[in-house]
Image 1 (cartoon, helix red, strand yellow):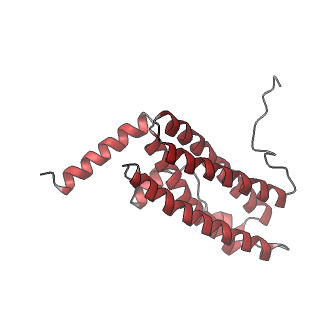
Image 2 (image 1 turned 90 degrees about the vertical axis):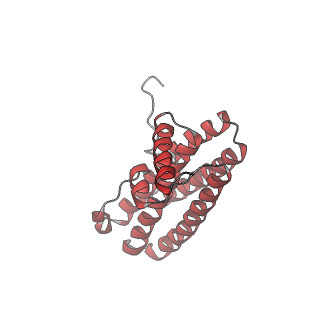
Length: 180
């Protein structure tokens, strides 16, 4: 019978393999880590945003926090349903996230904070797109469906935040090919 240490060592070894040859489960672990860090960053903005529209912006950020928590919980359960092991330690979330934290952000302007959030959602979308493709390739339709809905919700959030900044949905987010 395998010991707890044996089981954990096997999990760490498999996670390393899955992250170097990406699987839908491994990519989704990155998405979970991004959701976890995003919730912290959304709180940072909620707590420190100032400006003429800050009251309404705070209400919007509260809804984003609720949505992020729900997505985090549902995606973790979905990974378990898919026979995957979601990250379960702070260290794993720190290693898997691609979102950057900065304590200096609390001193930034309202526009800068919203712009940071926009870029965080765009970063999350890169991982979601990869996980959708891997889910489809691995024939994991339930995972692909959840991630597709998450992508759509992120797109709407980006568009809403960009509108707050006086921009259209993808202004400054997609690099144009010089040949176009």
